Amino acid sequence: MSSTRTDSLGGDFSRLWSAFALSEFGVAFSAGAIAVTAVEVLDASALEVAAVFGAGGVGAAIASLPAGLLIERRRKRPVMIRSDVVRSITTFAVPVMLWTEVLRLWHLAVLVAASTSLGIAFSAASGAYLKQLVPAGAWQRANARFESARWTIAALVTPLGGVVVALVGPATALTIDAITYLGSALLLRSIRSREAAPPPVGEATQHKAAQLTAGWAYINRVTPLRSLFANAMLFGGYITLVGPLLAVFILRDLELGPTHYGLALGLPAIGGVVGSRLSPTINRRLGWRRTLLGFGTLRTVWMLLIPLGSPGAFGFTLILVAQFMLMFSAGVFNPVFATYRMHVTDDDHMARVGAAWSISARTVQPAFIMLGGVLTGAIGLRPTILLAAIGLVATSALLPWNSTRPAAASPLPAPSAHKSPNMTELPNA
Image (cartoon, rainbow, N blue to C red; front, top):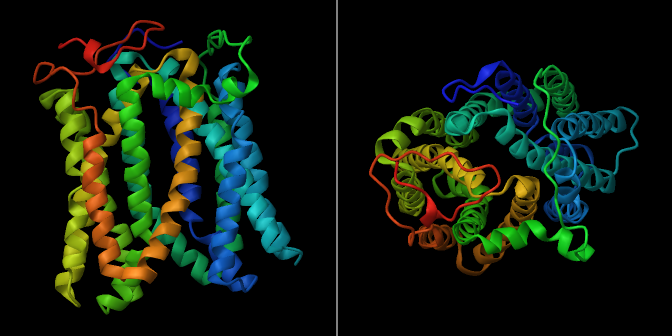
């Protein structure tokens, strides 16, 4: 399906990347639009807003359970195209209901669940599709390109979308989001390479429950994948826990305004852009193991600076530095991690592992947000952020430290067709 050159990503990758970037643009542009709709239009309380997203997340997790197995048995590009088209319809449903004045909170919960489950399906299919589309030697570059796009859009588009939502309302932002999904689907349709038939799943004799949980069973069976999964869930959980608290910390404890909060959200994302751009070079020089473990650890320490902040410029500077360095470290780590996960996952489990990963993250993160609210009420804001920062550092212990040490500058090797090596089986160079 892909070119024999391992140093070239090719035109079809550019189309896939453009589809991803366009849909990410829409998501970033409309970020917060659903919450604004709930609060400003439907006069929802904070508890009701949390319930909308909580119910939507749980509904998406339940609905997505069979997604991995179903996607595994199908060609991936059609799944991505259909997911984009249906996401466009469900997203545009909110403006339509707003204009016709029939929108209710439960509608938002249903639409959040539908959009989230479709996003999980798209993500699961895209990971498996990328593995086919791009030569193994170019996986690192490809993942770095995706990571760079994600951080760039977060830095530039999210603040712009916030201004648009504030000036003209959420319906316009959501309409633009819906249009970007259609654009993404058209770009995916323009890919010229013929997709290979899906690999045989070979589990028809398993009990249905075992088939549905095969992604988690596979993660648990592959030792380094299990470690990285636990690390990713807890890291993402602690980061998500602090997110809503950071707004309160900046606006109240540091006595700063909404402009500073917006800058604190947008400016540090430049660190992610820089890190993802440098990730292939750093990986070549340090080797995949040092990059994975080193930057996987380095990204955890910066949040310890935040509780030290005092009102005014000093506290704001600490937050900018902490967030910038965290995102820089994550920008280096994430493409190497994504590439490594592709190497250690069999072709016939790629979609199920991706779906299990996404479902778990969508379930764990809301739980951590609720935990943050409970802890803040019990012990206060700064102690809660400090506990989260300490927990974040502790997640580095879950990285796969017990692997054999490869040569200092060894890149990730190309795998055999269907073999999923443990980290100890990866050659040195």
